[in-house]
Image (cartoon, rainbow, N blue to C red; front, side, top):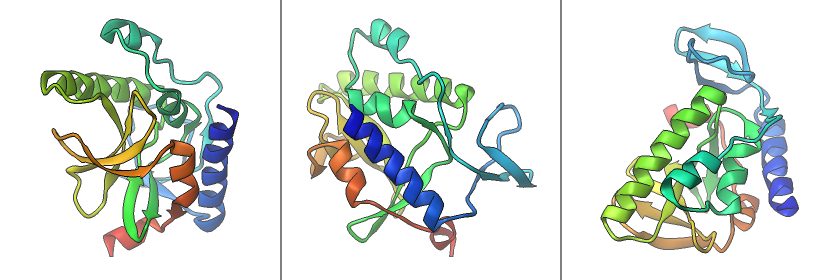
Length: 183
């Protein structure tokens, strides 16, 4: 787990170094520790903040009778941050992040729906951690049984392995300006 936490910390550090000014969606109802200067009613500057108490998966694990892979808990339980615009193998992807405790609760609710859908479709259980920028029906996911990072279309099984572990995948991702996705 220590190496995974180091990989997450390294990615955040590279992101902040390469993108000194970062923007994210502003949600006025959230008490987010990452929020800086409000740009307009929808946009705010942000800075990463390490979670003092990692997002807890225990109630959801109990309710779903599942144990989430450590990499899933780490990616959502290490930092409060805006979503990270990254480039993987020449393709833009967004690594989802938790902005606040309220956002963490929203994420857990979404993961519940995702796991229940996977069970209904009799597919291996995965957890989405990111999105393809070119098509938001393309998910970057972690196979809950193996920790493998792969690609899957919404409602489908993983069809491509990107890396055997989250740590390995994060090391290959490069920070990308959020503005280049809009331009």
